Length: 118
Length: 113
Image (cartoon, rainbow over all chains, first blue to last red; front, side, top):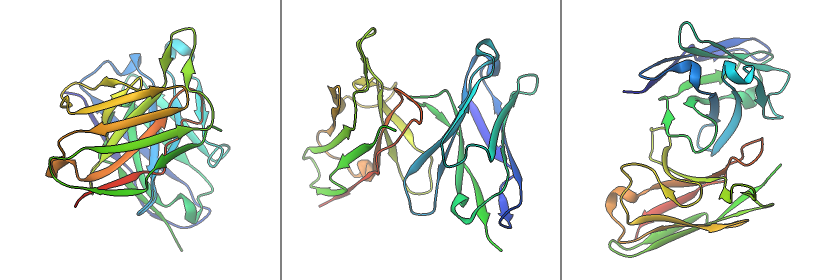
């Protein structure tokens, strides 16, 4: 059974950093791209970015709203994907979902809530 | 960026009737060499992550009942739910994965009339 479990969310002050982890199981992690999607409270879905598999140089792409502040990485030995979030802003407050793949996403984690507030 | 616009924003349909949700992209999401539309539909219920219903615009995800169908090509797409059931109450999103950023529609809230 494919499982994706996010962790690391919480309350953080504006300008600070936070790292989310996505611990996976049930599939060959190294074969898949991993993506992050977020959802602000009461709002719609926003694509954050993805990281390709090592076979595609683990290349990354990001939404303009987070480019330069957020970094997606992966540790294939641990089957974990990461979302490093720096210089956080109030508008980054959201539930962050880890997902397997890039488009037509069939597997999603339950989400991790990040609240950016002083 | 490709802008995805769904209509309507909300709709109420009687049990057993058909619900239709539209999604329009600001540019084509049809990749000509493969003849595939890079368009997916999701359903999201409160407190849950989205669930994939349809990919490649019309391919039903495993386990999704055949009363749920997707159609369209290029820039105009439709999600149809025939014989509406109580379990279909949710917010529905389309998403293009033709080019980054992989944008979502704003969502359509489906309720029972």
